[in-house]
Image (cartoon, rainbow, N blue to C red; front, side, top):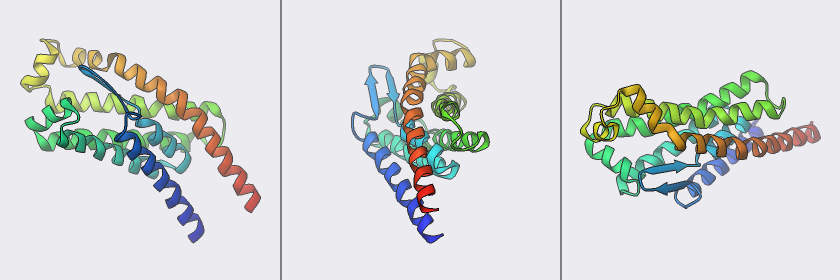
Length: 201
């Protein structure tokens, strides 16, 4: 039992390290004027599938913390602007959607049945970035839609229309990239885990 716990924590630490490396290198973000596309849901989702919902939530929390730190150091102009408006709401927006976006794919994959096919991996891999986008944009609207900054971006559009428009290309690219990369990686890691389990059984 102790060996399994050590193995679990070691694997979780590897996923945390990958998430941190991606967060602070060009691997994690594609930044253009007015648009920030993140690929950090890839290690978060793979970790959730391979290690379970709790690991997904932890990795999502790590992602959220790096996002909040980028608001603090100004490397994210959008996040820095939100931070200047309301630091508490910005912290909530950075953390809560990412934790849930890591937790939910793990729960879905556990419910579908672990190690039961590429399609189950794909479903969980797609859910992660979709929930990250939906929860983040929904939280942005709920917490900041009333502010002058977001009202200027919305240009008079109602709340729902703003959320849909804000998702746009960003949500599609993130979801496609995460699903296409996370699915085969997660499936391969699950196969390795299963094979090692059989050898040691």
